[in-house]
Length: 117
Image (cartoon, rainbow, N blue to C red; front, side, top):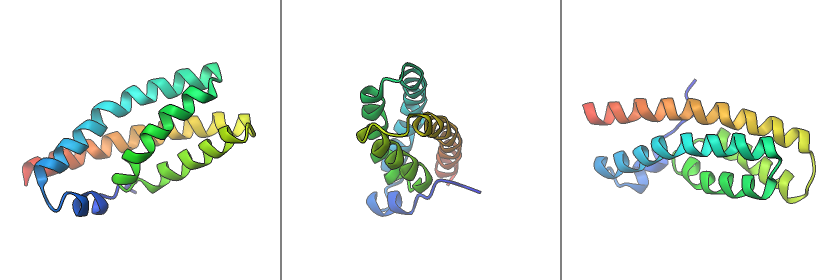
């Protein structure tokens, strides 16, 4: 089951395929870097840095209709804000990493389809 939904992006881009490709490519290239930062900051339990990384990621995932990721990020932000549920935050970080990896693969597929069309 796909976790990405490009309907919002299509609407935002007004059907401009080049603009969509640009945004998708940025996500595809930047998300692996964010994944590494999430791994590092989670391992260090550096919550303030982790919050900055995931907050930056949140706008991208919202634009790409990745609601599952947006929900995970919101839950993590709440946990970090309240300094609560450290174990849950760690578990959510690993779920977020997995979801990000899936989304990057799906975005790559979307890019290939847009190029082919």
